[in-house]
Amino acid sequence: MKTRSFLLSVLAALMLAGCSEDAREDEIPGNVLVGKAYLSLSLQSRTSTLTRVDNVKTEDGSAEESAVETVTVLLFDEDEMCLDVVNVPSGEITVGNSGGSTPTTATASKAQLVPEKTKKVFVVLNSAKWTFTKEVVVGKAWSTINTAIEAVIGDVATNSKFVMASAGTKADGALTPVTVHKPTTYTAEDVAAAKKAAEDAPATINVDRLSAKVQVSVKDPGFTKPTGSNFTFNGWELSVTNKSVRLYSDLVTYDNATPGAVYRRDKNYLESEQPDVSDINTKEANMDAAFNYLKNIDNIGENIPAVAQGDKASLYCLENTMEATAQQLGFTTKVVVKAQYTPDGIGKDANYFSWKGAYYTLAQLKAEYLKHSDGTGLKVDLPAFLIKAGIMTQAEFDEGQNKRDEIVANLSDDVTAGNLNAKTGIIGRFCAVRYYHESVCYYDVLIRHDQNITTKMALGRYGVVRNNWYNIELNSVSGPGTPWIPDPSDPDPTNPTPPDTDDDEADAYLSVKITINPWTYWTQGVDLH
Image (cartoon, rainbow, N blue to C red):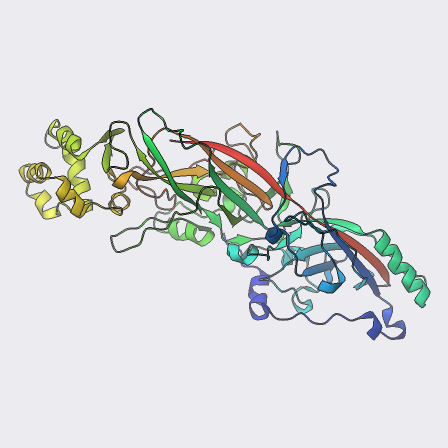
């Protein structure tokens, strides 16, 4: 399940420590240059330089989402063993980007010393949590470096500190092949010529933000169905977000993809890599180890989690993708929407109940209760709810049907006002009777990736991919959600929706040009029901 990488264990002691000083050219005497080379970087946005057919919509990042403070370049030989690390000084490079109202234009950096054996590179911008020192990465294989690292979204997406890394290609993978330029001799003239040759022909590298972006917007406040019902949007939050991320995730091809769309293989992509939910005793702990879930409360003393992101607000999360058969409820990133929905015939934002698909005021529920024979239907289900709500004790229930009938008959708005509140509907989950306090309810919206994938359970249909921006547009609503937060890690044990339910060394010179990708932008229209 969770792979704790070499980086996590080693970097814990080195995190935020300063990198060792790279040797400077003017400090190197005579033939010490043998076995070394130079690296020149040019970093720029590719918004106007797309070379492939691309039907996906792109949106520029904000200035904060595109800012670059540090540039770290990992150098590899042809066998993908790390040779060295170059940290480009901030004063020696201008990163071009598409962010904000005044996009910057890239300028090439001064040449940086690198080993001649350098054949491939990997770039990390704003490395933040991970400080790549020579002691940590030199001599290590790329596969060892690129293992899943436990993280929170704040590690990779904070104001003006968005971690970005090489986007890679399907053909070459994570590491970009480069051609280095070597001086014929080590005279000043030949060295200068090699530097110029490198800077005149930089290798182009695209970088992606490691985070995905999610936005929720309400299309039309008058979209409520059926006529006579009422809906008020109260906020949203993300749930089922990944707890770890790789610097690089392999690109994945899939059928019927929107041209230009990208899907990737994250660290728990395969069904076999997802948390084990086969044992009810360990299921929730296993799921919580891999994902962050928006949780319900279990008792009156706990606080209800805030679901308070506003209309058109944005949140960031770590990449979360899965193979076709692993697109399952408990492991797919989603949006939880909070709202007030009142069915037709019940006053706006009123308290009400539901039972077997029908909606009731308190008076209507009591009348329905009387229609049932002892020991059947609502005569069983309503007392069970009242016990959960603290209005009836187990001892009173055990006295028999007459006592139960007496308590139900004495229910009034005054009685329920003192016993039923915003927490009751959540605590009373798993009861056949549902209680909606002031009409508050919650909706589950699984995030679709490629909107061109219409076949259920087809690869690329669900998931969130790095550097992709998902706008969830609420189109309509046709009924209330649940009075509790949809939490797949805590399903109803008597009527469960299981979490595994399907979602649908000589010298050379090297110059590198790095591109920051704009956000790939998706809009998903959803109907709440």
